[in-house]
Amino acid sequence: MVQIFTLLLLGIQVSDDVGIFPKALWFLHEYGCSDCSSASNDLQLKSVLAKSLAIDRELTLEELDGLIRKDAFTKFAGIDNRLSESEISSALEAGTPSTRLRLAPELRRYAEFLTTSFDMIESEHLDEIDQLSNWIVQNWRHNGNLQVLTTCTGNSRRSILSAAMGNLAAGYYGFDNIRFHSGGTIPSAFNKRTIATLQEIGFQIQPTGEEAERGDPKTSNPIYRVVWGKDLESMEFSKSYKDKSNPKSGFAAILVCNEADAECPTVPGASLRLSMTFVDPKLYDDGVFEKRKYAERRDDIGRTFLAAMANVRRRLQGEK
Picture: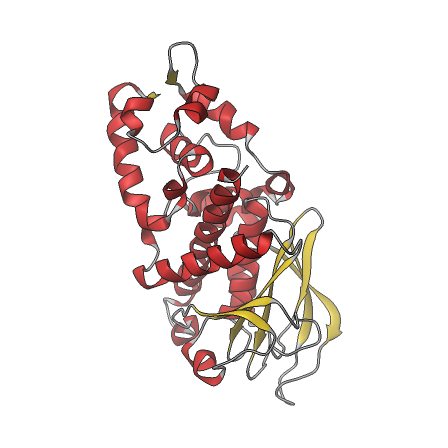
């Protein structure tokens, strides 16, 4: 299948066992202390796990050195008070949110892969991840449905990549009531390269045969159906961030390019305005690096939103 092409390039298939190290990492993301889901602590977390697992491929409370509460650890550890790989697997299965099971298998595995690379997130985005996480946690108690609007100039590349990967991240961590939308300051069209890089990891993207209002009279603006799982889909096309299909109040606005950030000092109706800019993959169009650069930007954006959602999930779980 075309959708698993990238996974095959990485040397993994949907049915492969990832091994104990990623499982241990995910276990602490799910059950560890609140700092375990923070991207800024990812390298330290991996260092502790690598040292512990190198001894006997099991985890003890002492080896985790305060990374998890005793009651959370003993809930899954056997009578020997040690966590084996099978016990870690059982704990992960027990904590799997229902929306993750609804994701397309290829996309679920790709999200899993990205969660092992939070150490690759740009340092400038760490504070922005915390701000977005804080906004979601604070508003979670008061609003059952949260909307996020990602905005760039043409609404053809980075903003659409951000909406797609944000929705994948929300589904992966169990937030079916968080939805990402996209818009631009000068709408153009859903770029074919953006479509290709999303399809490569498992998004189903098909034209509906209909066209939206054109930003440029000479550029067609097809409407596409974007699917990332069972009952998880959206209609995507290039549009203004003020378009009627986008949220109007109480949403988080994320400016993903410098131009949109400069043009929108305020975003009407937004309760959070956040600058989270990424390099434009358009710079590499029609060159030999084009495909890799679109994939690189897709993954940069993906792991950033996954880290934010991981942080939200751990904090909300900690409040229960």
